[in-house]
Length: 90
Image 1 (cartoon, helix red, strand yellow):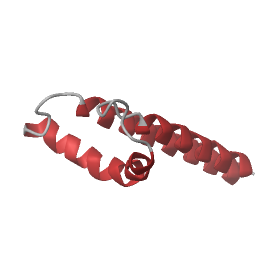
Image 2 (spheres, one colour; image 1 turned 180 degrees about the horizontal axis):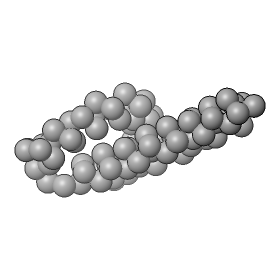
Image 3 (tube, helix red, strand yellow; image 1 turned 90 degrees about the vertical axis):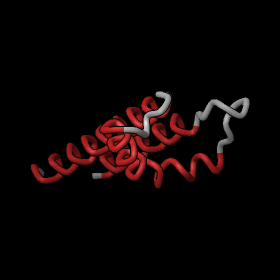
Image 4 (cartoon, helix red, strand yellow; image 1 turned 180 degrees about the vertical axis):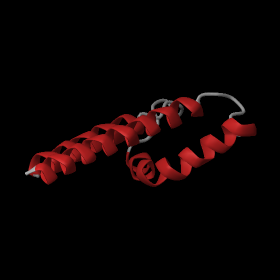
């Protein structure tokens, strides 16, 4: 029983951490010339972590007005739903 509680907590914590990384990555994308220096290396690392998950949503959901990308919002919603579902199943 204790192992299942630990596993649930681990899943929910991992989902929360990944969601935070996505949010930071999206916010960093709004900064002009972010790809330079130390912040650029962090941005690139977050991109390698987030883009495999975000790219399917970007293919499905086009930017609003050609500029505003709302696909990360849907990606976070799906991430939260799947994480909560997995924790509930356990």
